[in-house]
Image (tube, rainbow, N blue to C red):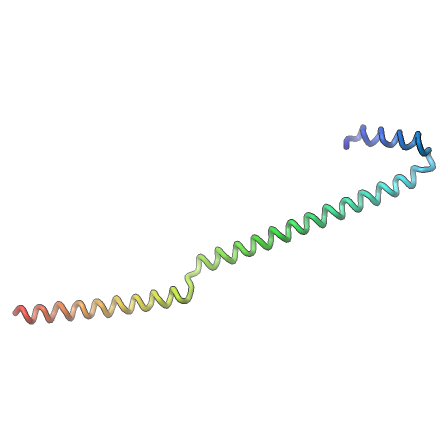
Length: 102
C-alpha cells in the first residue's frame, strides 16, 4: 500500500468514526503490524533453519566424499602388498627361466 492509499483510508475512517476513534485505530494498527512482523520473523527463522540443515548435510556429504574410507585405505595397502609379492614372484620366474635356458 502506498502512502496516498493509507491517507485515503485514514480520511474515510475519520469521516465514519470521528476523531474519538483514532486512538483505538492506532492501537489496532500497531498490534496488527507487530503481529505481521512477528510472523515474518518466524518464517525467516524457519527458512534459515531449513537451509542451514541442508547446508550442513551437504557439507558432511562432501567431506565424506573427499576423504577416502578406511576400507579403501586398507584395500590399497593390500593391493600394494600384492603387487610387491607379484613382482617378487615374477622376478623369481625370470631367474628360473634363465637358469633352465643355460
